[in-house]
Amino acid sequence: MNTFIPAHGRRRRALAGLLLAAAACALPGAASAQTTPAAAPAAGAPSADDDAAARIAWWRQARFGMFIHWGLYAIPGRGEWAQFMEQTPVNEYAKLAGQFKPRHFDPDGWAQLAKSAGMKYMVFTSRHHDGFAMFDDGDNPFSSTKTAAQRDFVADYVKAARKAGMGVGLYYSPLDWRYPGYFFPDLYRDSAEAMRAQYHRQMEKLLSNYGKLDVLWFDGGETDWLSFGGDWSAAQWQKRAPGKHYGGGFDWQHDKVHTMLRRLQPNVVINGRADMKEDFHSREGDGALGDFDDQHPWELCTTIAGAWGYQPNMQPKPLKHYIQLLANVAGRDGNLLLNVGPDPDGRIDPAQAQRLREIGAWLGKHGDSIYGTRGGPFLPGSWGASTRRGNTVYVHVLNWPGDKLALPALPARVVRASVLGGGAAKVEQSARGIEISVPAAARDDMDTVVALQLDASAEGLAPVR
Image (cartoon, rainbow, N blue to C red; front, side):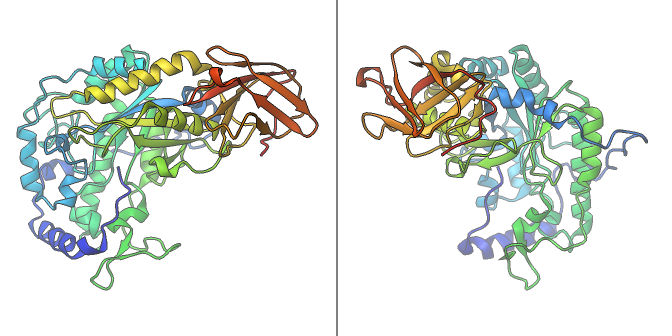
């Protein structure tokens, strides 16, 4: 992932490491990385985007997906940012590729676990910021097909996800720590352009060689993230002031990639982390839950435990945390992408896998209140959130304020109320509002889902607080 900015105490050490890397400039796979970018799309290729709503429709209905961060960083087991945080020289880090030969890599098992968790799509890291390609990248020596594994992990993952009926997603990082041009795009322009050439070439391969893709999840491709969002003009890293953008001469040429991806994968949905027209917006981490938004598709991505990349013995939070998070995300009209980081051999931690199955068991009883719904009409509050589909409003009561929950009035009549999963609910409706009560024995400490059937469609109601 890409939300880290070097802390003040690490800047001098980081700068020294970056300058040393720039001086060396000998990158694993550099010869391949400096090949010509993908050719421009044929004349007449469609440029207008009139299909965004239809393209995103399945994704909005899915609501819940699995993120998988897995690569060389699983070997040290200190998270996907270990190389940068510990300033490991690129050639030293590259030696991990000689050890990366997972004995228990089982993409079918991953897909079945996602399915048992109630997830509807998956997103796998095809290449993270360390530059190691988990796919066949031709002659590039820094890839899983040209090192110890001798395996195209993207191909195996795509096949397994598709067989399990999952939406197939790939994560890709245009930035690459091996290139000094990422940190100094103007000082090391040749390096920056070589990194860009790698990005364009690898995107063409991913878009062309693996069949239909459903999600393309960019990370670190925003122009303003060059130099980690900083300004080196005073020979000292300083975070750019709010509203100040990168003003140098380097250009990722994302427009060419966007044209290419719409030509090769016209229905793929993309996030907004590469300065392209986004299909959905990414919010990162539990703390980024944010507000209700039913105008712009969005997704909250977060980890089930620890960092995005593998860390041993990281225990998941209680089931209640994930159920309430899922309800809060859906009630704000977003999707939840929950990450696991398999170990160096490809195994997902048993405790984390068990928690995922428990989430799936809950969804087996309450999935109607999540899948295919939209957030609202009751805006989220300290009590919980609501979702809706057809004539039904699902009230997710996460915190009972007392014997009754008081909600705003709706311009529709409640004709029936019930507790999802079993139980009765009492509803009192007037011009002033709606009051819901559920006997203590029928309440669920995690999420009491009360289904309110209306005499009119719930989908057209304006949100109310």
